Length: 253
Ligand SMILES: [Zn+2]
Image (cartoon, rainbow, N blue to C red; front, side):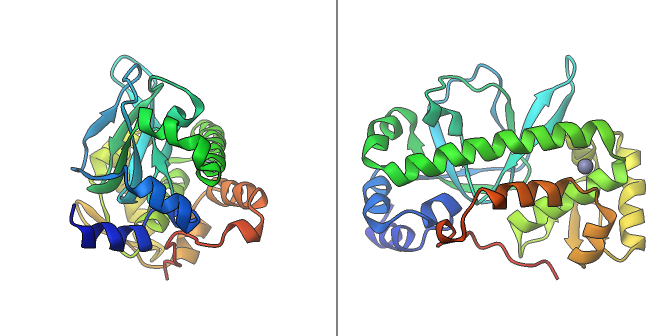
């Protein structure tokens, strides 16, 4: 990494956690970060994988998957540019307890887990943010468990697209019907039918491997309540003063 790249990244990080750090903590941390890239549909973690490093995601989307059978999995959480993959390491956890798979090409700033643990006593703001991030992933897993057990494919798909769109904005969502089916635990044909319904509502524009969100309000009307419920739950725990350097989330329409 060149000094110029380091200076630009340290001064204007794209990751939501890094953006909330005071300059002193950011500079201390940044000396130990290395850029990392992941291709789409790339497995990163499996249950039992040693958490050797943690990734502050700068771009892209990673699904956290739970196993529902010998070769079946369903999404129980996700991480984008607001968070970090491997946050369990900050809690002292040594091994992953779930699968993590990239849904899009991802860029991240990576840190060795051991080094992160050494630094955390000197990074109280980062420590607090990581604990909160871990709590948020837990709340997300609870909400998605309720969602997967209760809501229709169409409404779950709309909910997934809303969450993915917020994390990837302004880029379209690059994903196939088959991968969407694997995430939601349904057959590809069911995804195709649900996408046609959302297109009929003029909420999205879909091709074989790309989905563009046309109208967030229409999409939200098609979705189950879970996305909004989770957002309100998490916002209730975030006093406005703590949202000083938000991630680059923006409205979809
Ligand atoms: Zn739901």
